[in-house]
Length: 86
Image (cartoon, rainbow, N blue to C red; front, side, top):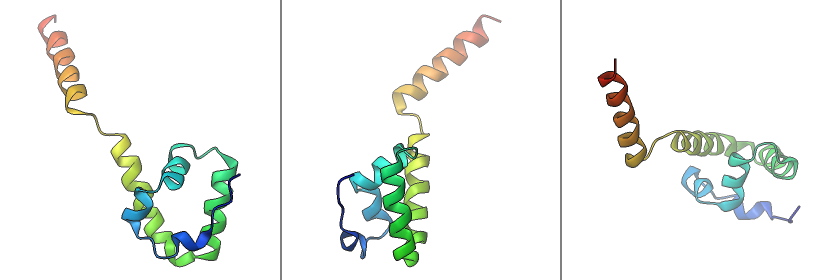
């Protein structure tokens, strides 16, 4: 695991966490034990940051579940084709 200094994150708000590569990697790879250990330990040392982390995590997860405009168009096209063929 790469040593990351907790102090870097002391003043972070949810937007800062969302823009931090190390944080977003943890959200994308929650099964990574090194990342999980780091962030769980960080929260133990800075429990006041748990709310900001929770907000950032939820926003990142929500944004991953949104379809792009192109994906939406393709989906509507498929729906219309299906309706037309019935």
